[in-house]
Length: 315
Image (tube, rainbow, N blue to C red; front, side, top):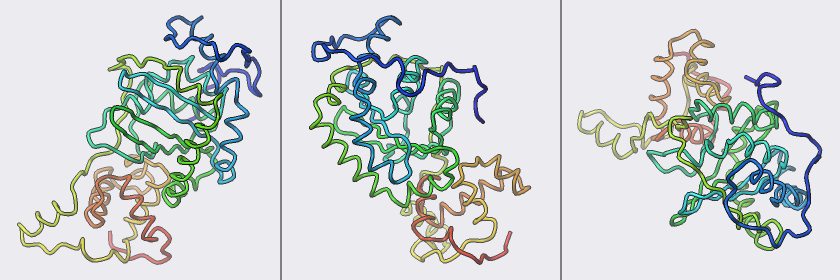
């Protein structure tokens, strides 16, 4: 659902009101506290004043059909530093306080490497963040998370809403995204102007209760656990056998899941109950040994089963 015009204040486009600062190297790294300090912090931020540098680095990514890239680093003091390819959205993001309710504030029960945003539960400010991002072309969002010691890095990739193939693209070409991350790290390290962004920390406050971000962890069973369980009840496991086909309903549910539909939406489209949809997903996760729906989508894509032209017609 696209937000109503006027619900969010959209900043000027085409780089207007982006102010450069000739004394950039002498900027203070103190935390901004008031709106005036925030404005000063933003107008002097490398994402805004060196937008062309960031655009140049991201050109190879744009050629793949990806429209947006950003990197967020959270340090041990819960401070955020960042760079992004869209300066207008970067300014808007901070002015709306969305840095306090983004994915980096989520509590993960199970550490994740990849997060597909269509499988993320968002409420409150987190849902506002996602809906407002659509205005800037951030619809299909995929995040790669790296953890090293007390440091966490979030690499966000996004594409516009008309590119309905992007969720599948992300999973098929994770290797390309990983290669770009390595390229980005190297490029920023050599670019003193953009690298300055990582010396400008912004404190992340405790905003518990103002938003909810939760990734689907409805099934966290491993293939070993499932096999042991089946052996205990004397049922032969199919996990070691390759899955050669999907039933009609399984394929329909899987394809809608790839489009970002929720179980409720899939149930409505297929005229079945949401509980039945979850039964199909749990059955698929057990067959593939998938821990959650994100892994399930990846497993389905890797096997090529979503491209099958004939399916069995069991319920």
